[in-house]
Length: 464
Image 1 (cartoon, one colour):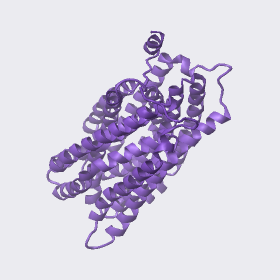
Image 2 (tube, rainbow, N blue to C red; image 1 turned 180 degrees about the vertical axis):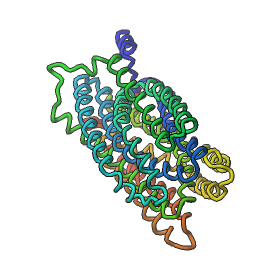
Image 3 (cartoon, rainbow, N blue to C red; image 1 turned 135 degrees about the vertical axis):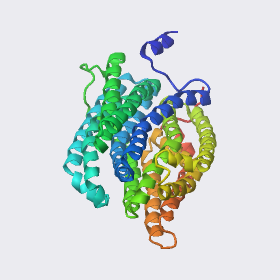
Image 4 (cartoon, rainbow, N blue to C red; image 1 turned 90 degrees about the vertical axis):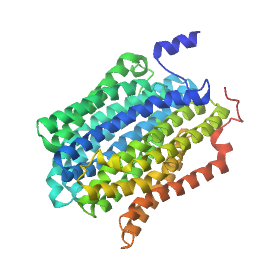
């Protein structure tokens, strides 16, 4: 009874009790809905820019999206790695360790965000050159980037506190703040672009304002709702050991996320070399693509938090059951989404591109029908990322990312150079990379699962 009162008072939820599938799904659904709303930031930009400003503006915003995804991945990776430590400490019921981890993580992420902000503002022209932006789009791209970079601090605030709340089993509050900011983003997009005619800068301004609403909002909520976790006292201070622990998890998770999106940036440069038509097609198709497999990505993150809490609580059998349930759920969902994207690829592209841009739509449909047929593969890959991160093996997640993205980049450049293959080779390189990484990750798990799931000094324990 006392434990129940404590949960009600703090709003914390343990994932170490109850039916595995129900517990995992109830926790995952708000995360999935939240990130679907977050995608609305970029979806709104793309749809409104494509409709009101044309294919050139869409190509510029699309290239900027790949860059911002890379930068956000650094912050997100650090937050996800920190969240794993928070989840383990929460599972262990180590309150002091949790508080010190929060302090160490906030300090680390804050410093990294400031450094990133300085670097990107100073290097705008170099970034545009590295992305091989056509000369006709350079000024438009610079205008967009100058504004959108200002949102990095908001991205840090939201992702840090969302990670903290989720690690405690609260995935609903981050959803609420994203819902408000997503609606605001769409309204401001229409106002700045369609009414005030502020061009691509207006689309960027709408996104940044909305990001700050969610970032500042979730920060204030956490400080008011969970003052006991953020309060400093004599016993809670910035300890080197905690910084090292957070860094060991966060740096590798950050590296994994960065490699993933650096590979995508490398492919973006190759795509840009095929001209504005392919750029515009890719810009629209990649939004549909990201929206389509986002649920399995977030399910993988929810599975990771579920696993980390149970790893901290030494619930070995519950982890194994969770793996079986998660794989089945992810494969079924990925297959259903693949069928939908394949069948509706053309109408989906028409949401972003005027029906008169037939060449752009056709190329986007070709991309979606090649890559979109294999979403179950990336669903398994996200589960593997989450599993190894939760079990204290983030280095393995990095290895899988290198295999997946390394294959993708190498094959994309090799196949695209063949006249008989061309841009189609870029599209086929994606599922091939997923398959190879899945095979490696699953093989490693089956060879080492006994040592992976049992914590040091643990011989096994029956799950609840």
